Length: 150
Image 1 (cartoon, rainbow, N blue to C red):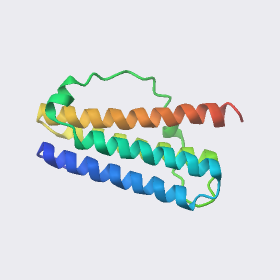
Image 2: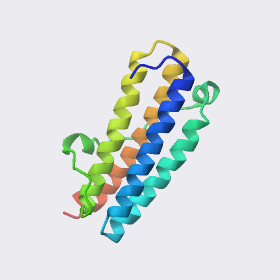
Image 3: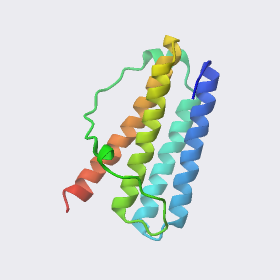
Image 4: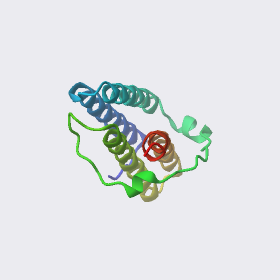
Protein backbone atom coordinates (compact mmCIF):
# COMPACT_ATOMS: atom_id res chain seq x y z
CA UNK A 1 0.00 0.00 0.00
CA UNK A 2 1.57 3.28 -1.10
CA UNK A 3 0.44 6.47 0.63
CA UNK A 4 1.06 9.94 -0.74
CA UNK A 5 -0.99 12.24 1.47
CA UNK A 6 -2.12 12.39 5.09
CA UNK A 7 -5.71 12.27 3.88
CA UNK A 8 -5.04 8.94 2.13
CA UNK A 9 -3.49 7.53 5.28
CA UNK A 10 -6.39 8.66 7.45
CA UNK A 11 -9.05 7.34 5.07
CA UNK A 12 -7.26 3.99 4.87
CA UNK A 13 -6.81 3.77 8.65
CA UNK A 14 -10.44 4.63 9.35
CA UNK A 15 -11.62 2.04 6.79
CA UNK A 16 -9.35 -0.58 8.33
CA UNK A 17 -10.64 0.17 11.82
CA UNK A 18 -14.23 0.05 10.58
CA UNK A 19 -13.53 -3.34 8.96
CA UNK A 20 -11.98 -4.61 12.21
CA UNK A 21 -14.97 -3.27 14.16
CA UNK A 22 -17.40 -5.08 11.83
CA UNK A 23 -15.32 -8.25 11.98
CA UNK A 24 -15.37 -8.34 15.79
CA UNK A 25 -19.08 -7.44 15.95
CA UNK A 26 -19.85 -10.28 13.52
CA UNK A 27 -17.62 -12.61 15.53
CA UNK A 28 -19.55 -11.69 18.67
CA UNK A 29 -22.84 -12.34 16.88
CA UNK A 30 -21.87 -15.83 15.71
CA UNK A 31 -20.06 -16.91 18.88
CA UNK A 32 -21.84 -19.49 20.94
CA UNK A 33 -19.80 -18.89 24.08
CA UNK A 34 -20.75 -16.03 26.41
CA UNK A 35 -17.06 -15.39 27.15
CA UNK A 36 -16.27 -15.27 23.42
CA UNK A 37 -19.13 -12.85 22.77
CA UNK A 38 -17.89 -10.58 25.56
CA UNK A 39 -14.29 -10.66 24.32
CA UNK A 40 -15.29 -9.87 20.73
CA UNK A 41 -17.62 -7.07 21.88
CA UNK A 42 -14.78 -5.52 23.91
CA UNK A 43 -12.50 -5.74 20.90
CA UNK A 44 -15.16 -4.17 18.67
CA UNK A 45 -15.46 -1.28 21.13
CA UNK A 46 -11.70 -0.78 21.06
CA UNK A 47 -11.69 -0.73 17.26
CA UNK A 48 -14.48 1.85 17.30
CA UNK A 49 -12.32 3.96 19.61
CA UNK A 50 -9.34 3.56 17.29
CA UNK A 51 -11.49 4.63 14.35
CA UNK A 52 -12.42 7.85 16.16
CA UNK A 53 -8.83 8.58 17.20
CA UNK A 54 -7.43 7.77 13.76
CA UNK A 55 -10.05 9.95 12.09
CA UNK A 56 -9.00 12.95 14.22
CA UNK A 57 -5.27 12.43 13.73
CA UNK A 58 -3.22 15.21 12.20
CA UNK A 59 0.47 15.89 11.73
CA UNK A 60 0.67 18.05 14.88
CA UNK A 61 -0.84 15.33 17.05
CA UNK A 62 1.50 12.75 15.51
CA UNK A 63 4.50 14.98 16.21
CA UNK A 64 3.49 15.27 19.89
CA UNK A 65 3.12 11.51 20.24
CA UNK A 66 5.73 9.90 22.45
CA UNK A 67 6.19 6.20 21.85
CA UNK A 68 6.03 4.13 25.00
CA UNK A 69 8.22 1.06 25.08
CA UNK A 70 6.04 -1.87 26.08
CA UNK A 71 7.72 -5.25 26.32
CA UNK A 72 6.50 -7.37 23.42
CA UNK A 73 6.06 -11.02 24.36
CA UNK A 74 5.99 -11.91 20.63
CA UNK A 75 3.57 -14.75 21.32
CA UNK A 76 1.67 -14.05 18.10
CA UNK A 77 4.76 -14.81 16.03
CA UNK A 78 4.69 -18.42 17.20
CA UNK A 79 1.02 -19.08 16.60
CA UNK A 80 -0.66 -20.18 13.40
CA UNK A 81 -3.57 -18.22 11.95
CA UNK A 82 -6.97 -19.62 12.94
CA UNK A 83 -10.16 -19.19 10.92
CA UNK A 84 -13.13 -17.34 12.37
CA UNK A 85 -15.74 -19.90 13.47
CA UNK A 86 -18.87 -19.79 15.65
CA UNK A 87 -17.58 -22.35 18.14
CA UNK A 88 -14.08 -21.01 18.75
CA UNK A 89 -12.38 -21.74 22.05
CA UNK A 90 -11.10 -18.87 24.19
CA UNK A 91 -7.55 -19.75 23.10
CA UNK A 92 -8.58 -19.63 19.42
CA UNK A 93 -10.30 -16.26 19.92
CA UNK A 94 -7.20 -14.78 21.50
CA UNK A 95 -5.01 -16.26 18.76
CA UNK A 96 -7.30 -14.90 16.06
CA UNK A 97 -7.28 -11.43 17.65
CA UNK A 98 -3.50 -11.41 18.17
CA UNK A 99 -2.86 -12.34 14.56
CA UNK A 100 -5.28 -9.64 13.31
CA UNK A 101 -3.54 -6.98 15.40
CA UNK A 102 -0.09 -8.30 14.40
CA UNK A 103 -1.08 -8.00 10.73
CA UNK A 104 -2.30 -4.43 11.22
CA UNK A 105 0.93 -3.53 13.02
CA UNK A 106 3.01 -5.03 10.20
CA UNK A 107 0.96 -3.17 7.58
CA UNK A 108 1.55 0.24 9.16
CA UNK A 109 5.21 -0.52 9.94
CA UNK A 110 5.87 -1.54 6.35
CA UNK A 111 4.05 1.51 4.98
CA UNK A 112 6.05 3.80 7.30
CA UNK A 113 9.32 2.24 6.13
CA UNK A 114 8.42 2.85 2.49
CA UNK A 115 7.43 6.52 2.77
CA UNK A 116 9.88 9.41 2.50
CA UNK A 117 7.82 12.24 4.02
CA UNK A 118 8.86 12.37 7.73
CA UNK A 119 5.48 13.73 8.87
CA UNK A 120 3.50 11.01 7.11
CA UNK A 121 6.00 8.43 8.37
CA UNK A 122 5.33 9.64 11.93
CA UNK A 123 1.54 9.29 11.51
CA UNK A 124 1.99 5.72 10.24
CA UNK A 125 4.31 4.93 13.14
CA UNK A 126 1.69 6.21 15.61
CA UNK A 127 -0.91 3.93 14.01
CA UNK A 128 1.53 1.00 14.12
CA UNK A 129 2.16 1.63 17.82
CA UNK A 130 -1.57 1.67 18.57
CA UNK A 131 -2.00 -1.70 16.85
CA UNK A 132 1.06 -3.12 18.58
CA UNK A 133 -0.31 -1.99 21.94
CA UNK A 134 -3.56 -3.79 21.23
CA UNK A 135 -1.68 -6.96 20.23
CA UNK A 136 0.46 -6.82 23.37
CA UNK A 137 -2.63 -6.43 25.54
CA UNK A 138 -4.13 -9.56 23.99
CA UNK A 139 -0.82 -11.41 24.40
CA UNK A 140 -0.85 -10.62 28.12
CA UNK A 141 -4.36 -12.05 28.41
CA UNK A 142 -3.20 -15.12 26.46
CA UNK A 143 -0.20 -15.52 28.74
CA UNK A 144 -2.34 -15.41 31.88
CA UNK A 145 -5.36 -17.40 30.70
CA UNK A 146 -3.82 -19.91 28.31
CA UNK A 147 -0.12 -20.38 28.92
CA UNK A 148 -0.23 -20.04 32.72
CA UNK A 149 -3.37 -22.13 33.21
CA UNK A 150 -2.24 -24.97 30.93
